[in-house]
Image 1 (tube, rainbow, N blue to C red):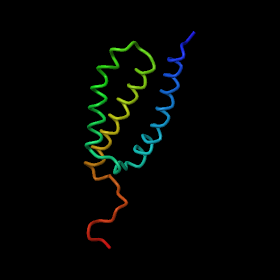
Image 2 (image 1 turned 135 degrees about the vertical axis):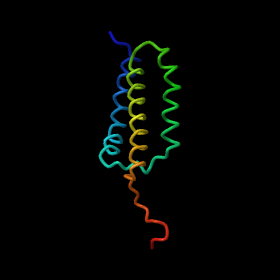
Image 3 (image 1 turned 60 degrees about the vertical axis):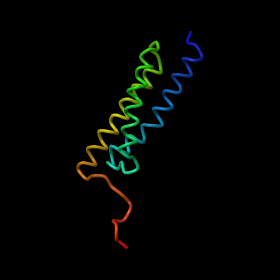
Image 4 (image 1 turned 180 degrees about the vertical axis):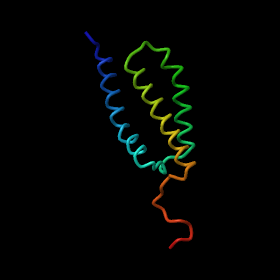
Length: 100
């Protein structure tokens, strides 16, 4: 029988992944990552890599799946941010400087 903490871990993993997927789909479809900064993307990825040291010390379980999902999703967001920014594909709703 599965313990309550493992059930909670599975449920939270599903909930957190489900809450992040729309952001990833929107970023992929629109290529609009203008609400993110390079600093935010870098800090999220560095934090995930550092946090990996802790996660791998734990027995395999839902936290490994959740952390793996975060590693992949923040990595994708960084790659997309760099790619779309480099190609000028970032969109902004703000008018250009000097535009009335």
